[in-house]
Image 1 (cartoon, rainbow, N blue to C red):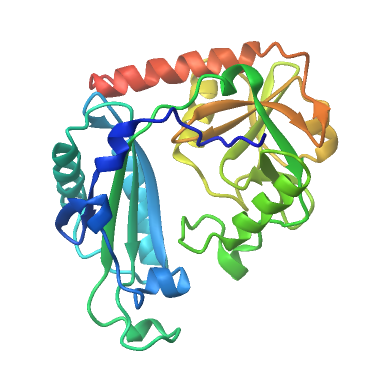
Image 2 (image 1 turned 180 degrees about the horizontal axis):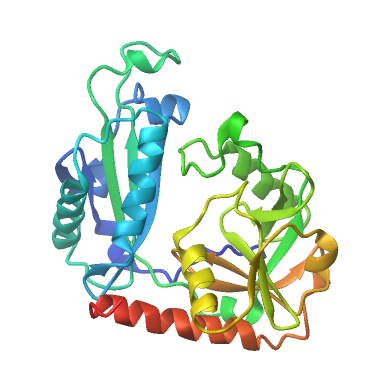
Length: 305
């Protein structure tokens, strides 16, 4: 049975969540966007995933920097500043009575188009902003079982094709990779870069541990995740050798440990790659990093980091 890094314990409260749509906060059954919306029609938009811990959005400034930079890169007018986004998030959380174990998907599109064609100038009514928040706690079993990866033919492309650093609504590249992994009997896809080096998964950033050293890709062909950077920083600050470098499947297969990073699951262990078991099941470095990350979240929530 396939599992994903975004598996959460079922929470019946999510059946009645209220969703922010362009300033209105309505029941999920009433939350709608037009079929003429550029996001629906063309995948023309930028999104951001965030988590709420004890009433505080983890690493809000870093997420907003990425969000606004991405919008600027595609000439997408957000229509408000960071304070405006923060207020929209606050209103949505309050409407749902949410303070902890909350995952948010913030989505901005170029808005409703006058005609069903590609040109961005046809979106004349302003952007569409949607905020979905759910009560969402990652399932515990992934921490012991781990994720099964399969390397796939679908690659993350060159920046001058569609820069993979963009958190865009156009996710077909990753969806195809995910389908290829499922066809191979795995949970998630391990994607290579255009030169054949190990890069990222279809949904998360990828790390390996070899002889006590933590390796991840150069970051040139993947989403530069906020959690990815926090793990790199934690390693640097705590004397764990960490390298952003090119490496092949050969090094990945022979790793002592491997894990994924993402806003939802934080650090998720990898059990196997292409059917090859990773390490012996003992993950001391991964556990250390998980502990440091939990401490970082606590400090951040308490205003000490």
